[in-house]
Amino acid sequence: VTASEFETVANVASEATPRGAVVMKFGEASVADAEGITRVASKLVAAHERGARVVGVVSAMGRATQELVDLARQVSPSPDPRELDMLLSVGERISCALVAMAINDLGREAVSLTGSQAGIITDGAHNRARIVEIRATRIRDALDSDRIVLVAGFQGMSEGRDITTLGRGGSDTTAVALAAALDAGACEIYADSGGILTADPRLVPDARKLGSLTYEEMLELAASGVETLQLRSVEFARNHGVPLHVRPTFGDAMGTWITEEDEHVEKPIISSVAHTVDEAVYRVQGAAPAELFAALAGKDVSVDTIIQTGADVIVFSAPLDERGATAGTLDELGATWSERSDLGKISLVGAGMKSHPGVAARTFATLRSLRVEPQFISTSPIKIAFYVHHGDVDRVVRALHAAFELGSQTGEQG
Ligand code: ASP
Ligand code: MG
Image (cartoon, rainbow, N blue to C red):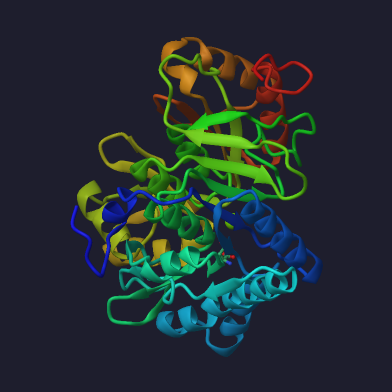
């Protein structure tokens, strides 16, 4: 491996670091106010005192990003993507500068860096840029002089030297990419939920925190409505073998480890029941699949479930907030189409499903006992997903959680 001035993620990852680095990422709720900022500062200092080389990645404070998005929309109905990135990147700059100040007051040296100062190089796709390289020299120098380094999440700089952002939830991806570049032992994601749960606790009061998950399970969950981790951050972690630890912001309790599957460990049949009501389902007639999906991809519509029913009919789902782009594309193609936004998707995810038959049987028996008719059923080796009417989502999630004995009352897995 040759060391160049511009090190790629892969190059850096193979370098030995003198002391173990840890990347700790704090979400918007953890840094929502001055008190939160101080608490995050103490957590970073405590990790530094334990001897680690500490990199902190923070989200914008509370609802700051959303407020900036709303503000931009008041000024311009569809804001220029480059200027939107200039605006949105500010949120994370604020929080990381504040955390650095608080650390300095605790008697430690800290330095805050924007994404571009930190050497995070992305492609030029504004508002949803991908990290292509990390030139971590500056971070490493600061760590070498024993500083705690704060990096503004969710942002980078394109090769054309424009500020870019990584898509909503992108601070997770910043953290994982830095962990890969610095060869950190783990990437710690501090979240209010304290980990990944067997279901959304707002629907299922006895939902339980999972001790571990595989990357594959977490990818399915992140694509199925679990927002604790940005989907891309999980892909990045899997591709670079970065262990993820989703932990509670308060206290020192263990959270959920997300790692490569261990063939020797028996996996729960179902790990979690996820749901989302943020998708619309489209039924399209008279469009060839190749053209249809090429056109949707061209408009950046993230298509999920695809089902071909009959020779001429295609059903697919896409996020509700991409409705305008989806409708525009379908009209341009001259297809006959209809849309349903009154459906919610429920997904059962579990790595143990691969080796245990009967999951579908138990799922559909449970639905029948509730007199709920599932629609647009789709599967992967570790997932069963289907749609039900919005009004049925809550009770279906609760019933399946109970049927697979996932709760803290009944659960057998620790
Ligand atoms: N602040 C950004 C957002 O709200 C990025 C993040 O929090 O991860 O999406
Ligand atoms: Mg997030």
